[in-house]
Length: 105
Image (cartoon, rainbow, N blue to C red; front, side, top):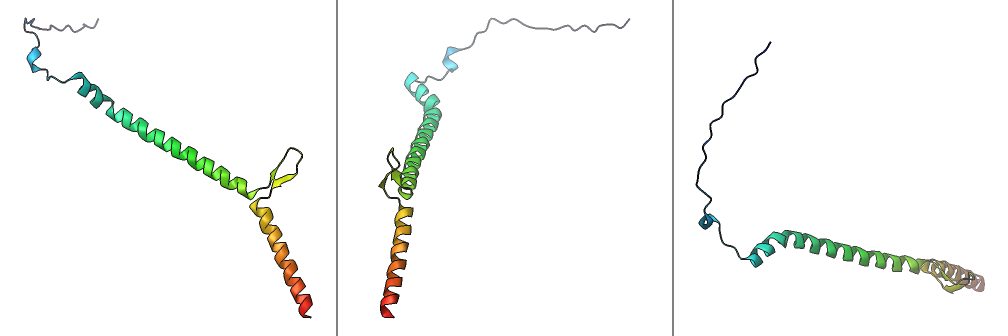
């Protein structure tokens, strides 16, 4: 049968305690500020990023709404979009060119 190894430990109990004088004295206000500064900096930067993204999204929505016709509940066009205005302008230019061509002949 195998033998189980045994170990003998030697320790020494002391009556010495940690010294209070070796701990640096820091005011609680400075300690809290230093401890939370990286977190507050991160939160501030993320908040700014979020607000910029929201503003960009609103701007893109406003710009994209300019390109399509705005209609009421019945489907009637209230405000023409830029695509409609552009196509109408091209039609008018083409009609004017044809009219000028026929007048010259």
